[in-house]
Length: 100
Figure 1: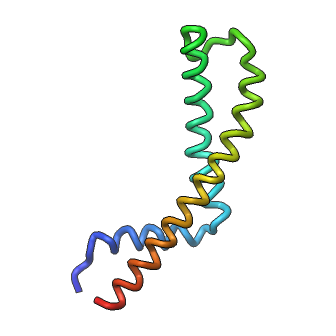
Figure 2: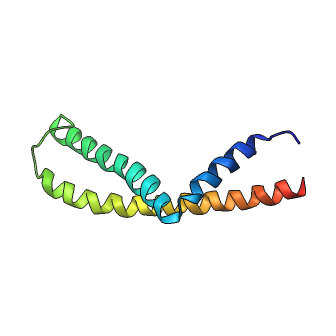
Figure 3: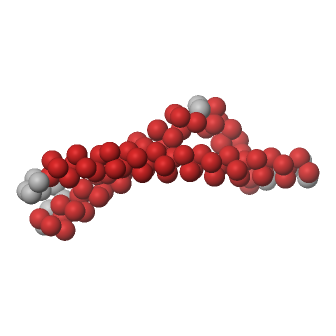
């Protein structure tokens, strides 16, 4: 049987799902995506209002305290949705591989 491009994805997802759902959500959703968006949104706001992404002008501490829980929450939702989407695709591709 010749390996399909989906086989590489399935193999990679099997490795990732072994670490567990919660660890996947926190590492890929909260830390990677949510963390990136946290820093990006703060830098864009600071640049737009004060002309420099690393400016400490304005009430930056309040924005930091608001953005942190916001991006943790959004990152958790993103990680959870990615897990569900990947599980759905994995199940579909596994069923399809069995019928081939």
